[in-house]
Length: 155
Image (tube, rainbow, N blue to C red; front, side):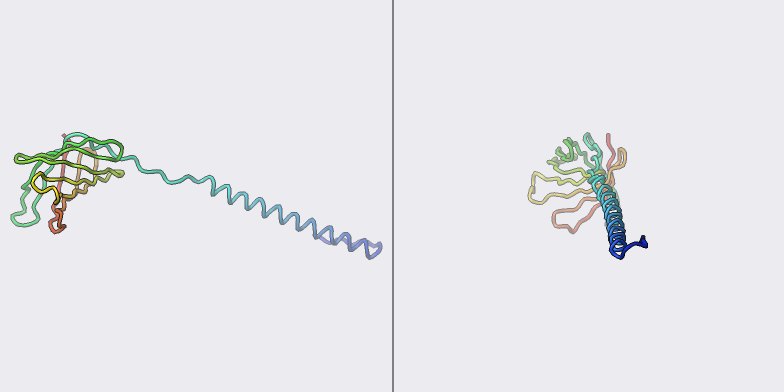
């Protein structure tokens, strides 16, 4: 806002300079408040948290189904799992053999490796989603060319 007085030209100039300074001070204050609000919003945000893993410890009855004719559910075995946080360990067993299981749980997804005593260098990889007392997923052999669907129920 410009104010001119009817006095001398010097006084009118001083009033104009004071008015410009006042306007600039107001703009600086408004910019500072806007910046503070913006940065306060950023600092108030929280970092994403990891999803708590589901508990899959216990005994699971597993059934796998063949993808080739005659399309039967041919292999059944049990998984006996222990869990500490996101880490899994345990063993699998069927009527003929047994072996070790290691893996992880992230949220409701389980990833495991099953080793065989006769060929420990060629493990099976198991990936499944957990919903209540059910696991649904697939097993893949060590060469990756045989993917077998599976289901499991906690016993």
